[in-house]
Image 1 (cartoon, rainbow, N blue to C red):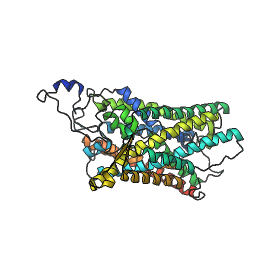
Image 2: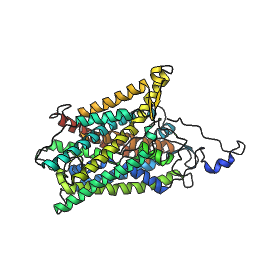
Image 3: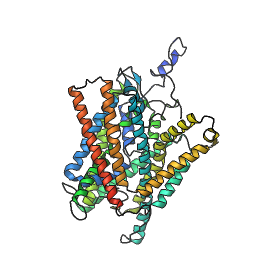
Length: 504
């Protein structure tokens, strides 16, 4: 990781005035991004594996509430994203000091204990994302085997298999890749991520449309999954709440807006391979790379104005795409829509297309795991280096190609991957984990901190109409997050009544 450097002085006295045309006010290479490039970055970053659970979410809510809830989430996230865009610069929106990460913005506006709270939530979310990715990759690998089995042996064959071997295989691959210290700055990963993400999302949408046409009409009902036929009234309530978390997981992206306003496109996309969501901007470990050029060009117009327009374009685009994927999945399968559209075997043929889609998910998540975990790895290793600067166990390093091996790095990163793999084997419930991650991170990172930063940044007077409205919005979103988290936890508890740990 490259530490953040102080802005370069540009003046005739310092002898580098001729470079001023190529530099922005902070001494970094002049930004060239526009509304359209920023919109493209957001759309590419947001659309990920979270889209695969939207059909299930709409099935729980029905045609009446499902699309309406998705639209409400889109509106809330758009609004809080515009608030966050105002916090890119401290003080003056045109000439104020820039923030380069979400954590920088929190530190500049709020400081103190709230910075530590934000960091703790982000790092905890990174651990949850690692577990979720392990589950998602393993069920996609298992789905490839099952699709081939159904094709060769027929659909009546159960084709059962455990996901545990695939989780162990995924973990072994991540142990190897985790020894590459700058994995999150390998530029071509962003291209692979974008291609893989749109591949499996597009295949899921296309299969949903094909199945709906084959059915001769839309399935589903206004109120969603009906009580009875194995679904109790309590389960209906909990699963409806969990659906909120699944939608939040697919939509949440506002916490990466600061990075888009301040980072190079490839650097930004490569550390965000995944999208699920959702989902977390990395605190301090993500710093400036001198080989990168930042995205949105300097005023006029202000970066905040550009980002607001980009947010509107990207939210509209992703909402249309999500509506199509979720609604066509529900139209194809009705109340029987699986929690993962490509692994729940609503589709059986063409089996090779399912294999391609699931292979794309696995490829996406292999890189995404590292990109999301590298900030956590770097944080722990910086603390260890500061605590034991003379320890050979921590400091001595051996370079082998892209790998940087030290005893501490090998031990700590391997232990982390093993722990997340074991946790995934204990709770291999993709839909529940996705819902819980979306619920837990939605309110603090997407709503609370942006509102609090905006209040400080724009000097919103306590007790004013605007302040009251902002606090009411925050309180309402908190209730939604708590309810969605409760729904996911309740569903996990319900599943554990019949699930034996490590049984796959």
